[in-house]
Image: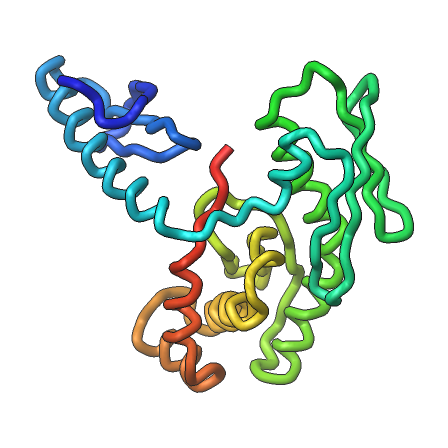
Length: 231
């Protein structure tokens, strides 16, 4: 069998096999207890499936605001919610660190750090500095449209999900939404707030979204044009 994509195997005790994309590599988590022939069949099926996923992804717009820094530049300005910009200034240092002052992130980068680790760190920094503004936006929308009880709003980079809502009233949003058009961000906020009343995707839930945002389907369509970075 010749693989369609480079892949990495992980054998598990799960009953089913599944695959995910990490960059250009497919990570295949095989179900436990399968004979070798069945394993080969599972790998072949999952690789073909993920090749189709990758082909679709290549047509989407990659959200990758830190590519300039990852490529070696030391100064980057990125837009944020309040229409201002956050500046990143990168210098070499003995250890990885970030200090935020006056709207600027002063970042120290060690010479031996991997791109993946540094990339994650940059996303974490922008999540920290913009969490307050995002929470304020969520609470303003909730106050003017819904009136639900929110305990907390979090902001962090997620590999797959755009947002989540817990039964305890915690709204989590993907930091990547900072770099999408505001109408898409608003849709995700409306979506997650609606889950506070309907913790499912039943017709009642979608009706809740439609009443608050009649054009939500168009915004969903726009969201599908983007893809998250994988690292």
